[in-house]
Length: 253
Ligand SMILES: [Zn+2]
Image 1: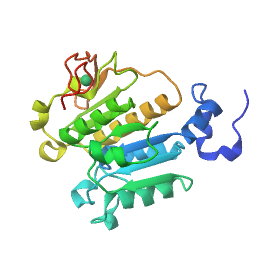
Image 2 (image 1 turned 180 degrees about the vertical axis):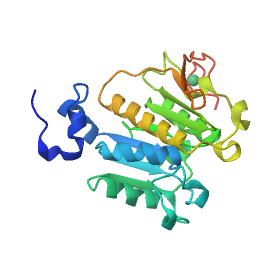
Image 3 (image 1 turned 90 degrees about the horizontal axis):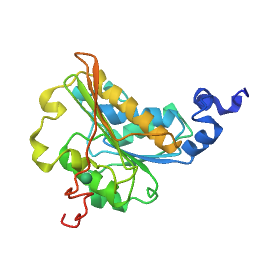
Image 4 (image 1 turned 60 degrees about the horizontal axis):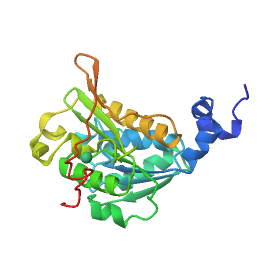
């Protein structure tokens, strides 16, 4: 077996993988990923995507760093309190990988804001936000643009991850899974969350993004981890033919 080129450095161990190889690494180096939400999940997902050699990463958030975030958002430290997450995050990610091309977008992301960003036509989107209204906006954009969307969330001892977008005509989107009526469900500020749970979900989202970019197989099931029982559940999501985002009559939004 040929040895990875030493000059490839930080990516050498993943290049050794048959499912990645030099070709997969080149795909990663030429890929574009949009990470929306730079909280506990986004910090870790963006860190691993940066260290894995993703060519261009957009990081989006409108919020600043608060002391109560630091246990989960481990890209930031005490001295970063009060700074905008995306500007601080960009600096830290470039420290992780000086070759990284990181664009910071200091805005609350909506479908309209996403449509203003140039260069994301073939991007993989990671929804690391903490509220349903943003999630629906991002999902609508992904469905309209036929883009891959990975959603992740965490609350209490539980984390969820799901991948959408291999074929919106046949398979589900995020809005087939949740509706606007679910908007009152807890978020992590209200319900609490164990600090490592968002980190685990962020790692899994980075794995799924790498699999998509390198042409490895993905599946649409919702994966739910219960940290108290240490058990995983996998739930198949049925496409909702009446879905307002991906159903046949999807022009009523
Ligand atoms: Zn749908």
